[in-house]
Length: 117
Image (cartoon, rainbow, N blue to C red; front, side, top):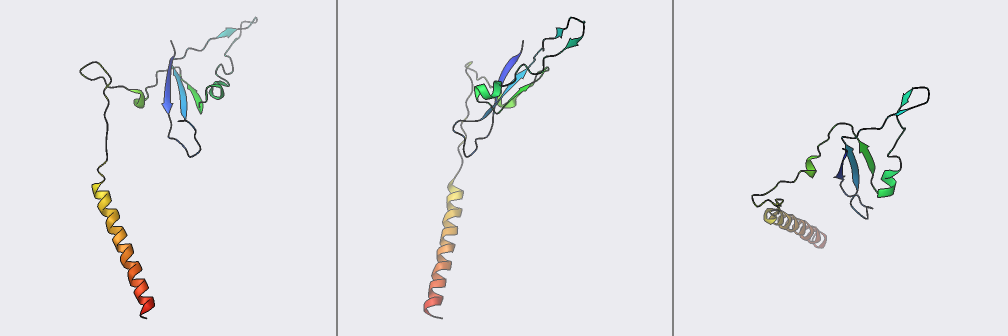
Protein backbone atom coordinates (compact mmCIF):
# COMPACT_ATOMS: atom_id res chain seq x y z
CA UNK A 1 0.00 0.00 0.00
CA UNK A 2 1.32 3.45 -0.90
CA UNK A 3 2.57 5.73 1.86
CA UNK A 4 2.16 9.50 2.05
CA UNK A 5 4.88 11.69 3.51
CA UNK A 6 5.37 15.42 3.75
CA UNK A 7 8.75 16.98 3.05
CA UNK A 8 8.83 20.49 4.49
CA UNK A 9 10.86 23.01 2.54
CA UNK A 10 12.59 26.17 3.79
CA UNK A 11 10.27 29.17 3.84
CA UNK A 12 10.75 31.86 1.26
CA UNK A 13 10.17 35.58 1.61
CA UNK A 14 6.70 35.57 0.08
CA UNK A 15 5.42 32.30 1.57
CA UNK A 16 2.19 32.76 3.51
CA UNK A 17 2.51 29.20 4.85
CA UNK A 18 5.40 26.72 5.01
CA UNK A 19 6.06 25.17 1.59
CA UNK A 20 6.08 21.39 1.24
CA UNK A 21 6.35 18.52 -1.19
CA UNK A 22 4.02 15.52 -1.05
CA UNK A 23 6.01 12.28 -1.34
CA UNK A 24 4.17 9.10 -2.28
CA UNK A 25 6.24 5.93 -2.09
CA UNK A 26 5.60 2.22 -2.39
CA UNK A 27 3.16 3.13 -5.14
CA UNK A 28 1.97 0.31 -7.36
CA UNK A 29 0.74 1.78 -10.64
CA UNK A 30 -2.32 0.19 -12.15
CA UNK A 31 -1.81 -1.36 -15.54
CA UNK A 32 -4.48 -1.40 -18.22
CA UNK A 33 -4.86 -3.75 -21.14
CA UNK A 34 -6.39 -2.55 -24.35
CA UNK A 35 -8.74 -4.59 -26.50
CA UNK A 36 -5.78 -5.54 -28.71
CA UNK A 37 -3.90 -6.97 -25.72
CA UNK A 38 -1.32 -4.17 -25.55
CA UNK A 39 -0.49 -3.00 -22.03
CA UNK A 40 -0.06 0.67 -21.22
CA UNK A 41 0.35 2.86 -18.14
CA UNK A 42 -1.83 5.89 -17.43
CA UNK A 43 0.04 9.08 -18.26
CA UNK A 44 -0.12 10.79 -14.86
CA UNK A 45 -2.61 9.74 -12.18
CA UNK A 46 -1.35 12.56 -9.89
CA UNK A 47 -1.66 15.37 -12.41
CA UNK A 48 -2.93 18.56 -10.80
CA UNK A 49 -2.73 17.20 -7.23
CA UNK A 50 0.06 19.60 -6.18
CA UNK A 51 -1.99 22.62 -7.20
CA UNK A 52 -5.10 21.31 -5.44
CA UNK A 53 -3.38 20.74 -2.08
CA UNK A 54 -0.96 23.68 -2.23
CA UNK A 55 2.21 21.58 -2.54
CA UNK A 56 5.24 22.68 -4.53
CA UNK A 57 5.34 19.23 -6.16
CA UNK A 58 4.23 15.62 -5.85
CA UNK A 59 6.99 13.00 -5.99
CA UNK A 60 5.92 9.41 -6.65
CA UNK A 61 8.18 6.37 -6.21
CA UNK A 62 7.58 2.65 -6.56
CA UNK A 63 10.26 1.90 -3.95
CA UNK A 64 10.30 3.02 -0.30
CA UNK A 65 11.80 6.46 0.31
CA UNK A 66 12.80 7.45 3.83
CA UNK A 67 12.78 11.14 4.69
CA UNK A 68 15.04 11.63 7.73
CA UNK A 69 13.14 14.75 8.81
CA UNK A 70 10.01 12.62 9.28
CA UNK A 71 11.64 10.19 11.70
CA UNK A 72 10.26 10.53 15.21
CA UNK A 73 12.38 9.42 18.16
CA UNK A 74 10.32 7.79 20.89
CA UNK A 75 11.34 8.44 24.49
CA UNK A 76 11.35 5.94 27.37
CA UNK A 77 7.79 6.97 28.26
CA UNK A 78 6.55 5.95 24.79
CA UNK A 79 5.89 9.53 23.65
CA UNK A 80 7.77 11.37 20.91
CA UNK A 81 11.00 12.87 22.21
CA UNK A 82 11.29 16.61 21.75
CA UNK A 83 14.60 18.39 21.95
CA UNK A 84 14.90 22.14 22.21
CA UNK A 85 18.19 23.70 21.19
CA UNK A 86 18.92 27.21 22.34
CA UNK A 87 21.87 29.20 21.07
CA UNK A 88 24.49 30.75 23.35
CA UNK A 89 24.29 34.42 22.42
CA UNK A 90 26.66 35.75 25.10
CA UNK A 91 29.70 35.52 22.82
CA UNK A 92 27.67 37.06 19.99
CA UNK A 93 26.62 39.92 22.27
CA UNK A 94 30.23 40.60 23.20
CA UNK A 95 31.26 40.62 19.55
CA UNK A 96 28.50 43.08 18.64
CA UNK A 97 29.41 45.36 21.56
CA UNK A 98 33.06 45.33 20.45
CA UNK A 99 32.11 46.21 16.85
CA UNK A 100 29.86 49.04 18.07
CA UNK A 101 32.65 50.48 20.25
CA UNK A 102 35.10 50.33 17.32
CA UNK A 103 32.59 52.07 15.04
CA UNK A 104 31.96 54.76 17.66
CA UNK A 105 35.72 55.27 17.99
CA UNK A 106 36.09 55.72 14.25
CA UNK A 107 33.26 58.25 14.18
CA UNK A 108 34.74 60.16 17.12
CA UNK A 109 38.17 60.30 15.47
CA UNK A 110 36.63 61.46 12.18
CA UNK A 111 34.67 64.24 13.91
CA UNK A 112 37.80 65.36 15.79
CA UNK A 113 39.79 65.42 12.55
CA UNK A 114 37.16 67.69 10.97
CA UNK A 115 37.22 70.09 13.95
CA UNK A 116 41.03 70.14 14.25
CA UNK A 117 42.58 69.48 10.85
